[in-house]
Length: 86
Image 1 (cartoon, rainbow, N blue to C red):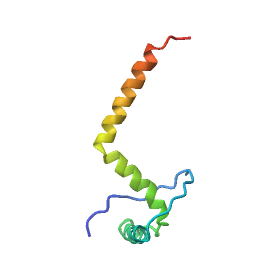
Image 2 (image 1 turned 90 degrees about the horizontal axis):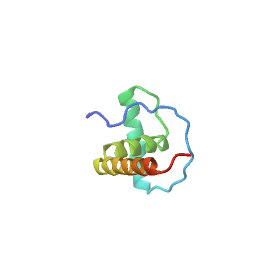
Image 3 (image 1 turned 120 degrees about the horizontal axis):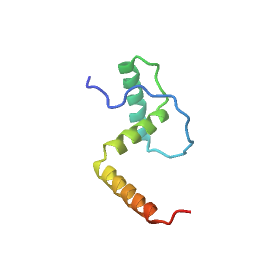
Image 4 (image 1 turned 90 degrees about the vertical axis):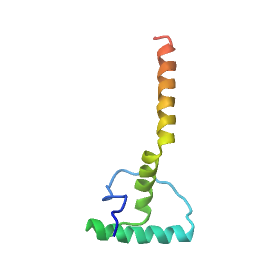
């Protein structure tokens, strides 16, 4: 089996978000959780716990988003430095 993109799921303080998923996507999350448990020798995680690390990985790999974020940060820094100091 090919190496999965996600590693062990960390137990971190969470923010509750409620979403609706298509049934097929939920089935895929269940299957992914089972495969991840086999690969990492962990007990199976709840499929919902996969969503956050998957989104984080997706965002981290999105080059256009990273570029836009850097641009926003630079613009924000330039604006902040132009403001008079109190």
